[in-house]
Length: 116
Image (cartoon, rainbow, N blue to C red):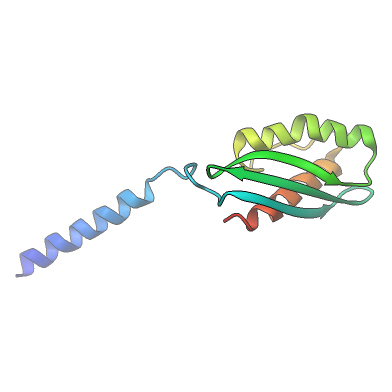
Protein backbone atom coordinates (compact mmCIF):
# COMPACT_ATOMS: atom_id res chain seq x y z
CA UNK A 1 0.00 0.00 0.00
CA UNK A 2 2.82 2.41 0.90
CA UNK A 3 4.51 1.63 -2.43
CA UNK A 4 1.30 2.53 -4.28
CA UNK A 5 1.05 5.87 -2.45
CA UNK A 6 4.69 6.68 -3.29
CA UNK A 7 4.13 5.90 -6.97
CA UNK A 8 0.98 8.02 -7.01
CA UNK A 9 2.83 10.93 -5.33
CA UNK A 10 5.73 10.70 -7.79
CA UNK A 11 3.33 10.56 -10.75
CA UNK A 12 1.45 13.60 -9.43
CA UNK A 13 4.65 15.61 -9.02
CA UNK A 14 5.82 14.62 -12.51
CA UNK A 15 2.47 15.64 -14.02
CA UNK A 16 2.62 19.05 -12.31
CA UNK A 17 6.18 19.59 -13.54
CA UNK A 18 5.23 18.73 -17.11
CA UNK A 19 2.19 21.01 -16.97
CA UNK A 20 4.48 23.87 -15.94
CA UNK A 21 6.63 23.29 -19.01
CA UNK A 22 3.86 24.11 -21.47
CA UNK A 23 4.33 26.93 -23.95
CA UNK A 24 3.41 30.27 -22.48
CA UNK A 25 2.84 31.70 -25.98
CA UNK A 26 -0.10 29.50 -26.85
CA UNK A 27 -3.23 31.26 -25.72
CA UNK A 28 -1.38 33.66 -23.44
CA UNK A 29 -4.25 36.16 -23.72
CA UNK A 30 -8.02 36.01 -24.16
CA UNK A 31 -9.15 37.09 -27.62
CA UNK A 32 -10.75 40.51 -27.85
CA UNK A 33 -9.98 44.21 -28.03
CA UNK A 34 -8.69 45.95 -24.94
CA UNK A 35 -7.87 49.57 -24.14
CA UNK A 36 -5.34 51.10 -21.79
CA UNK A 37 -4.19 54.63 -20.98
CA UNK A 38 -0.94 56.03 -19.57
CA UNK A 39 0.62 59.46 -19.18
CA UNK A 40 3.06 60.57 -21.89
CA UNK A 41 5.20 63.70 -22.11
CA UNK A 42 2.35 66.09 -22.95
CA UNK A 43 -0.86 64.11 -22.51
CA UNK A 44 -2.51 60.81 -21.78
CA UNK A 45 -1.89 58.20 -24.46
CA UNK A 46 -4.72 55.71 -25.10
CA UNK A 47 -4.10 52.49 -26.99
CA UNK A 48 -6.29 49.74 -28.36
CA UNK A 49 -4.80 46.23 -28.28
CA UNK A 50 -6.33 43.47 -30.37
CA UNK A 51 -5.73 39.86 -29.36
CA UNK A 52 -6.48 37.03 -31.79
CA UNK A 53 -5.73 33.33 -31.24
CA UNK A 54 -4.26 34.23 -27.86
CA UNK A 55 -1.64 36.59 -29.30
CA UNK A 56 -1.27 40.34 -29.71
CA UNK A 57 -2.21 40.95 -33.34
CA UNK A 58 -2.68 44.73 -33.53
CA UNK A 59 -1.97 47.84 -31.46
CA UNK A 60 -3.24 51.31 -32.30
CA UNK A 61 -2.78 54.65 -30.59
CA UNK A 62 -6.37 55.91 -30.51
CA UNK A 63 -5.96 59.16 -28.56
CA UNK A 64 -2.99 61.36 -27.67
CA UNK A 65 -1.83 64.94 -27.42
CA UNK A 66 1.85 64.16 -27.95
CA UNK A 67 4.06 65.84 -30.55
CA UNK A 68 3.11 64.27 -33.89
CA UNK A 69 6.59 63.24 -35.06
CA UNK A 70 7.38 61.67 -31.66
CA UNK A 71 4.25 59.54 -31.56
CA UNK A 72 4.82 58.55 -35.20
CA UNK A 73 8.27 57.23 -34.24
CA UNK A 74 6.66 55.21 -31.45
CA UNK A 75 4.00 53.83 -33.82
CA UNK A 76 6.64 52.88 -36.40
CA UNK A 77 9.15 51.33 -33.98
CA UNK A 78 7.83 50.54 -30.50
CA UNK A 79 4.49 49.03 -31.50
CA UNK A 80 5.97 46.52 -34.01
CA UNK A 81 8.52 45.49 -31.37
CA UNK A 82 5.76 44.88 -28.80
CA UNK A 83 3.83 42.76 -31.30
CA UNK A 84 6.97 40.81 -32.26
CA UNK A 85 7.89 40.13 -28.61
CA UNK A 86 4.24 39.58 -27.62
CA UNK A 87 4.68 41.98 -24.73
CA UNK A 88 6.59 45.02 -23.59
CA UNK A 89 9.42 43.24 -21.80
CA UNK A 90 12.71 43.96 -23.55
CA UNK A 91 11.23 46.67 -25.79
CA UNK A 92 13.50 49.72 -25.75
CA UNK A 93 12.21 53.28 -25.53
CA UNK A 94 12.96 55.49 -28.51
CA UNK A 95 15.65 58.08 -27.92
CA UNK A 96 14.06 61.53 -27.95
CA UNK A 97 10.59 60.04 -27.51
CA UNK A 98 11.20 58.08 -24.34
CA UNK A 99 8.17 59.38 -22.41
CA UNK A 100 5.86 58.68 -25.34
CA UNK A 101 7.42 55.21 -25.77
CA UNK A 102 7.04 54.43 -22.09
CA UNK A 103 3.45 55.68 -22.14
CA UNK A 104 2.57 53.34 -25.01
CA UNK A 105 4.25 50.41 -23.26
CA UNK A 106 2.46 51.15 -19.98
CA UNK A 107 -0.88 51.61 -21.76
CA UNK A 108 -0.41 48.27 -23.57
CA UNK A 109 0.35 46.59 -20.24
CA UNK A 110 -2.80 48.07 -18.71
CA UNK A 111 -4.85 46.93 -21.70
CA UNK A 112 -3.43 43.41 -21.49
CA UNK A 113 -4.40 43.13 -17.81
CA UNK A 114 -7.95 42.67 -19.09
CA UNK A 115 -6.82 39.95 -21.49
CA UNK A 116 -5.32 37.64 -18.88
